[in-house]
Length: 604
Ligand code: GCB
Image (cartoon, rainbow, N blue to C red; front, side, top):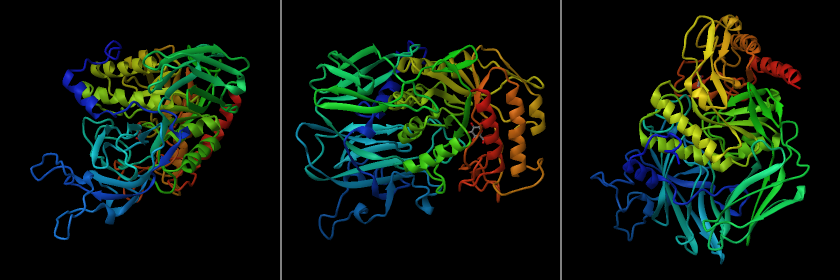
């Protein structure tokens, strides 16, 4: 399918490697609503910079690695590690902000957790990881389950036949070493937080269960619900009922031998989800013993010329970019309260839209956005200069994209899937990214495809949007830092923007840095006054772009980045936040708030 969509052909070897590294079982979706046993909390860890627990002294993988969780057989036996007396880290959580000695660490850490398990007859069990950054090798009771690559997407293994009655242990080798061939590559403007950064769960399902379901309004229709179900297990071909009880609607379909069935039907008086009216319906999918239940919003999203139509109405996206970084700790988000704090700040700015940069954020974040009625741009970390001609790199990007979409494809909040950020033009890149755009449409025909582009042509005073990738996108994202990386703030208001595409444009980034609390003249870098001048002059520029349908300035909150060493100002923080890392609002926060208040009135 991908080949047919224009993706680079994959040699057999690369394909085999990609498959070996993939999760052993197709992704279970809607995990927050399934019965499960949490494995979160304290895990024992061993820091292993030499990968001594994996390789022998001849540097070949050892059959007796740390995953065996060995103990000395008698008092003279030599075992040079011991999980049970090792230090602990909290899961979910990055290791960097939990231990000072791991702050800049890039390498292997072994995680181990013991847990009790009691088999329930007729049930299946899956070990589910919300995310591990970046490479994970997973072992249960000393035996390998599989591997996963990519720091921001979930993966799972079926483990029923490996679990023991009573005590079990899981060991994960997590390695966040950067590579040129990774996604992201070794070069990015954010912290390389390592570890089991998201929740770990033992999910329980009936023998036959609904693994996945896609329940959305059909593209172009305001009342036809359409989608598909995927059932796993011996009785997968038994009839499946999809229902929306509050709308008094249901459909019964019979899956094929693979457990797959499509459905559709008109639902009368379905209230549409949107900002200001985040109506969600309880949706049930029943197959035999299993009831898959989720809260789902229904809305349409389309483009027409330069317009983005939400439920048929032209909208302006009052957005803000944010990283998945927690206020106060500056590490990865680990609680839903941290997600909420970030989203509430966005709401305080009068945002109706967030760009979740530059990778899939935690699932709770998207669910919270849906609950609060905030539109979402979700992206994969195809960031800056990727190895466009490497088939294994393409396979990795394609896997991350598929997993992002699979996890969140029922979230009304998500309107835009983004395939890339600030990638350099060229034929191999175009082939790579157009392949991903085609994959998005094949996996999810209901949403819009976007990407954050840059201006590559130079004409004094004019910015022309003509990146050839634009022809493959529905909405064109543009990153442009007038007043910060080029030009004075005052020069921005005079810039002219041209669009060679009859498509909507969203200014997906603009902004400038300020150290919170630093005050001075408006032409002095790093002062709050300078940052405010950048914003106010960009507003003048934005207001003159006729085809603009939204913006998401960079960035909600200051965030850690190793690329930002300037002493006493940056200290390893990107300072373009509207709030400091401790949540203190800078002047520009109030400028944007006032600007969005006006935009909201204009676009009502
Ligand atoms: C960008 C990138 C973003 C950076 C930002 C900056 O264009 O997309 O990841 O952090 O600029 O601050 O330079």
